[in-house]
Amino acid sequence: MREIRSIYIFEGTDARMRRLSSVLSEKFKIKRSFPPRNADAVIFPLPTTRDGETVSGTFPAMRLSDAVSRIHSCSDGALFITGMAPEGFRAECEGLSHPCRDIYDSETFAEENAAITAEGALFSYMKEGRGTVRGKRALITGFGRVARNTAGLFASLGAEVTVAARSESALSEAAANGYGTAKLFDCGEKLSAISRADLIINTVPARIISGYELAAIEDGAVIIELASAPYGIDPAEAEKYGHTVIRLPSLPASYAPREAADIIKNEVLRIFGELGGTT
Image (cartoon, rainbow, N blue to C red; front, side, top):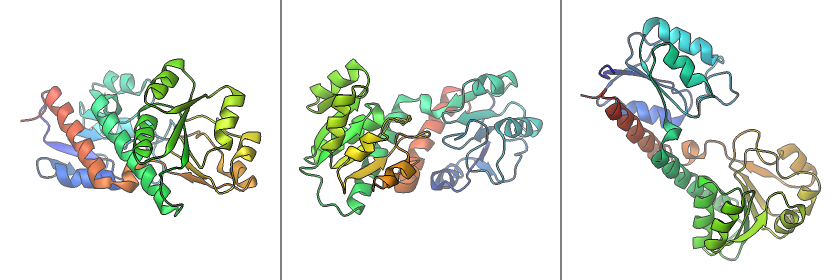
């Protein structure tokens, strides 16, 4: 691994990445032109792609394969740092002698990012002006990192939390934490949980609430979408039933870009150190 002296960062409109450029510029030379000539490392957007084909936030849209080939043409052997890159992308890059590391492989990064997302979800709920969290009946679908952090935060403020999840282990963990539970694919249990919720927060990236389930949601209930595409609820379908879905993609970037950038910076420096690329 060669020493890291210069970095190119796909900033786009992401406030986290602009902040990252600023803080890393204190130690490294930040390349500004693309393709970045002789860059030692390239940091792709987080997530690297939203559609599986193009680099997130590039205008006009740049295909992943084109970005790799153009970087390779003038920065042979540069380290690639990505975020939730498609399966096979790392192998493709490493086949061109570009070491590739995905930030989302880090448990520390994923957990800290999930904590910011949970706090941002709470902030978004409070902005709706629906009063305090205490006493509200909150249904959280899924029980991954984001869902666990969100459930814990809302419960700590007095919400009555119910978790709807698929696996028995997730439901057992949720019950052990004092939450109500509903089997995600048990129509009766899910419908009952949906119908009594004042607040629904989805973290499952799959269409899990539709049709008669939308009809069962109480008028005035707050619906927050934290999952990535294809999302858990179709906003247009929900609107037919009189509901508005608050979709919050990349919440750390919009809610706390400075703190989110610092988390990314720490992981980037850890990767550099692990590969022996820092002085």
